[in-house]
Length: 278
Image (cartoon, rainbow, N blue to C red; front, top):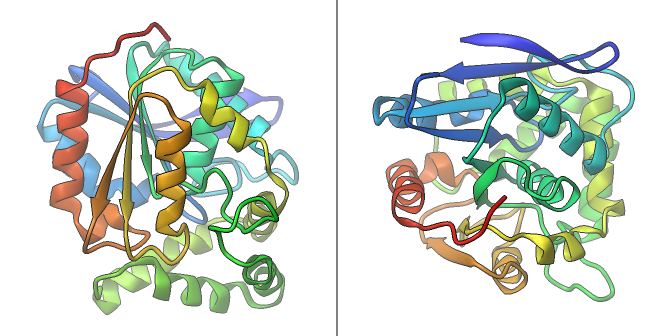
């Protein structure tokens, strides 16, 4: 079931809500430049296993409204809070991929993990997607600047290039076209503004220390977007966390090794006790 929820004046967020009567709820936050559709193969599988799967499209992406502003992590995490309050979600798993993982981390810190009992991070863009003087593990700043430049000059070409490095395993031409079409749904200005956060955002180093719920970190060792050392840093900064390596995956591990991905997520939700209140 799909519907729209108002998160602020003149901004509505699209939400896909599958199996509303499910025994456990997972709220998925997609990465750049995608939408909730990227989790199709999780929705397919997990809903049949009795889970309620909710995917929201970040503002500027997918079917959501596309305002000119609001693409910082604070506002994006506030959008998530508005959705959670509207749906009255409690004791759910918050799951974020790539930039969605960064937004999930900001949510946990900014909103004290409101409603969240467990956190799952997939190839998360944290603590920093780019290298810094004090953080040598990310992409070069120039690589991100090229993405921003390409967005403004020839966004379809930039998206095709990004799709070429997203998955580790070879995908079919129809699948590649499908992935490309999801990226085209986004607004150009939103695509560029989110990329700019990768250069400017530094607060996630502190945010991760504030996470108080069990956290699962899934990361492909062949990831060319959010390099694997980022996952190791997440494991170091987040107190109650577990890192699972995906040996045959790149950035799109939820497709590269989707069976393993789905099973690890279920195992974490079913077998991990939450020792703290959110």
